[in-house]
Length: 520
Image 1: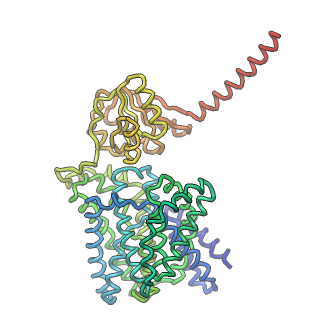
Image 2: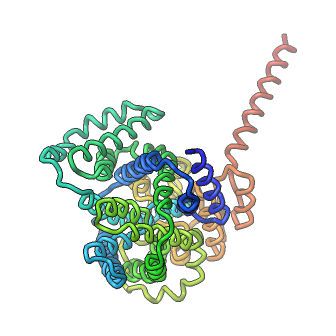
Image 3: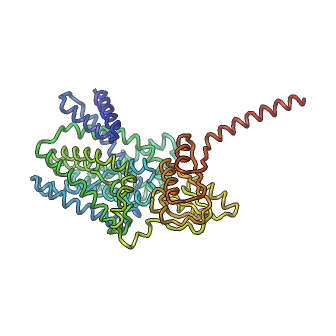
């Protein structure tokens, strides 16, 4: 029977994807269809799979946990204020619909969250994970996730064991855990180690009377900051997504909300634009430029999967009624459908509304917001990864004045340590190219990995009348044609050129060999 719900989840997930909506809307719909069909489904299996997906989700959140990304004023201040104001608004709505005060408070806080999964996917698809606005958005999401973990811990039911105090010693075990992590290598043993650490720590916390979800987060936090943590998170991403299908199916199996819960859901969905706009104005108050505040706002225009995860635990412990959880499932699904086109077209929307939104900016800008000088460089390398760094070094060795530009602070810091001059700049930001002085720059090298960013940066450079050469790194013919159309007067196709060079060498070897035979 398990194959039935897997097939239905796949079919409806594919249908949502064809409509350019998140597949998890289809998973929720599959659960509702199965619930209404009357077909008996083994819910224990679905529950265990879903629970494992939740543990892996929280483990990956822990892997990316950086306190310095949370304690910044624009994150802790704007994010904390947003959650507090949202909680007040949604708690008031819940009270108006007859929910108990404690239940209303929990519901209000849960509805203040935005989706970590949607935000990460949207930023990755746009190639903006290293951009300043992405760091602010992710920091706010981590702050919300930590609040969700507190709710999970408090609503898990029961008092923790006295032995749970021993968990405070976990940081002392970090050196040993990291040694095992490194010794696991980079293949399947690393993945297996991550699974054991996430599930094992979660089980330990549960045995000691704490939330298993809190344990998974703590396990991820132990590895946070290690150079292989991001690598493990990438390996777990697909596995986590697959197991989370079970969680959304289980939520959907609760069926459709009754009339009162349906009206409550519709009211909360109607408030989503207010919740979204609140991000914009709070971030503006913390000195962000309009574009960055707008990009954070569009990224976080949704309700969260953590609304359902923490809500399911709270409903299981009797803190909120099951009807509220069913309503929140509908609210989350609809918000995902609303968010999908907004997040994917965020840059186009900004270009449409920028002149209306720029007047909201404060006169004093945030110091980390954008760079406006390349320091008199004659060559500008954008994207300081492996290829960009090699281009920089080549020019520097020949005594040319060169500056690198990147949006990833970790990459900038690494290049600076290697004695390269690299400054912050988001190549997708129109204001960068409007304000930066490129009059002395003889050529620009685009070495970013994201194709859209390269194409858009080329277009914006030409729109702002940059007259000199733009060289772009690409390995695809279609991308090469688009870059040429956008205004890049030269592109590099390293894979094709490498193949041609290999063929050329093989022919030369053949010729040399035949010549030597003739000479003999």
